[in-house]
Length: 192
Image 1 (tube, helix red, strand yellow):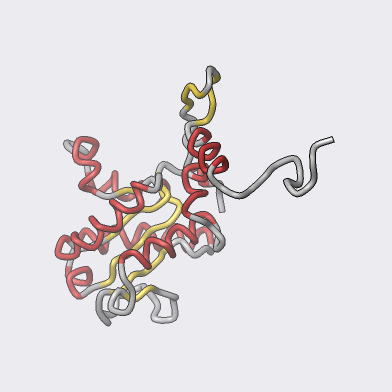
Image 2 (tube, one colour):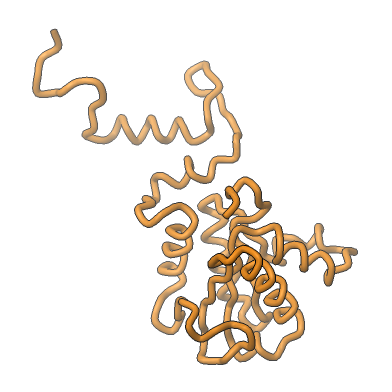
């Protein structure tokens, strides 16, 4: 799979409008952690006036690292989610990868989405649980919350103690000063 920098989005959400509340909550949580998401409500100006059939084809096929599909009865009935899923399926087929990440709201069968594909069931998990799993998928199973600013850093720099540094660095230095971690020497031994 390509590096995450090769994509405009870490996650693209495919969902029916009836399920927007779940997506809104998850998109907000992920965005607050620095994850780049394609969520139509965040793209109103960019989508205005575009040929959405063509544009969404590119988004769901080429521009996201993963596609989270919110599986529900409403999803199965709608034309736009089916279009998005077809594009995501084309990508998954081409790359032979786990690009499509299903999240179930109910037991609806979605044509083309195999029942053998691993999923998260929101009847058994919270959106907070789902957020943690998404972060693990993006950054690895051992990701810690305090690592996220560094992992999601986009190259912005700030002034810190008279020097230009990565924007995550001041918080990291501050956290280190408040911990019991000592760097460079064993505190139980006097300096020589």
